Image 1 (cartoon, rainbow, N blue to C red):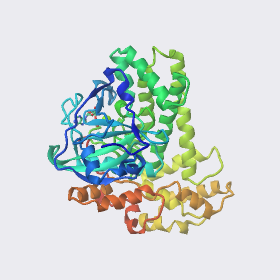
Image 2: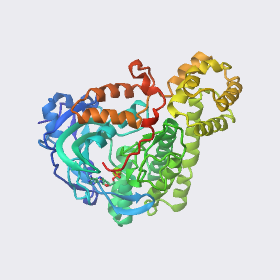
Image 3: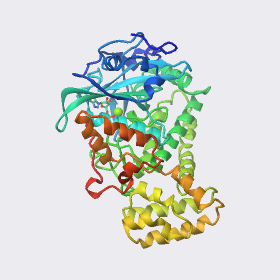
Image 4: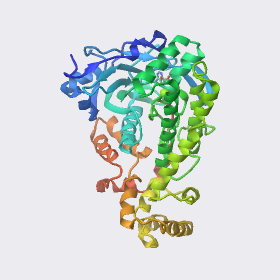
Length: 480
Ligand code: AMP
Ligand code: MG
């Protein structure tokens, strides 16, 4: 089988020094069923393959001319501690497709069997974890947040032991590259100097439009800072921000025990293995900076230390500027005023004290009319008469006086920036149960919603309400 005309494989990562990867064979899952594919299928020219041909290729039963299965070697810091060598333990690349516009799409299968980096793991993925990754990567895309993408979801019949026995599955994900901070850490800490040099040159030339390593690092810091601003803004908590889960391109990567804020709990921890709350919601921006420091250390032989420090020091100002901008947009403010950030933070504190649903509140605020508390009807209906919010709305009224935009236009702008729908864990859970029962209807319906989370979807209205208390704060484990 071949790729469509105009598309070709160019497996550039596989031309790097051998320390960075191993050639591998995929272990097909049993009785694989192709549950769903996204629009990426046609963008990659894979729509010429029948469902069966695509399933067989993604499941490692057949080859496409020019493909190459590799698993990469990386290392990393996990929960703040040097973890040594890690690597793609249950994921493997099938190759990098170049489309007619010369854009690179690496396809990686997650759950594709043992690799030399599987350590104690079984190389498998279960339906629960694959559906979560599938939905959330597309949800982040729908929200306009940099992320790896999902191409296809397969389920199988193998029994996979986790806390209970679950069924196998595979998710095909797509990104320009799988390179993580951990690839640089592997080279640096195991003193593979030539490999590090080659990796730096390759990354710089292939994925960054820059002339020097320093410029590339400045971009990595900036992209990471902006990604954190976006996560904080939509209330996304990643859950496992180890350095091996940090994309060099500033993409959200490795969806595991993630969670979106439901009640506004600023120190919300979504990963129930994170006993110290290292990766709590409000810690994410500083953790990303700590992770960047681990990355920049790897460049000590290439870039002067003073320079690296000054590059790291661009992180906080970039994060603060971006987050400040997003917070202003969240409140529908067009002009900049020094009161804005304090106004926003005081609101978050009140929302935290009152346990208000983060997404619901901001969406309601989009319908608020200046000086008219009655326009906040949906909120009062749900939460009752909350004095603290009334007082805050008074401050908001005063701030809105500085703006010339009409309530109507502000509302439109706020609705385009405050999503009505995010992938709360109980929603993911409903889809998982449906897929486990062999259906794909809920998955399709939810993808539709998540691709346009700022629009109204009347048949899903109840999911835009605060999370029902019996479904709140589902804890999710790392086991995937
Ligand atoms: P994660 O916490 O998901 O980022 O995984 C950390 C490391 O463990 C990565 O190197 C993974 O490839 C590896 N890993 C996680 N789950 C499995 C599994 N079921 N089989 C093999 N390796 C795994
Ligand atoms: Mg990982």
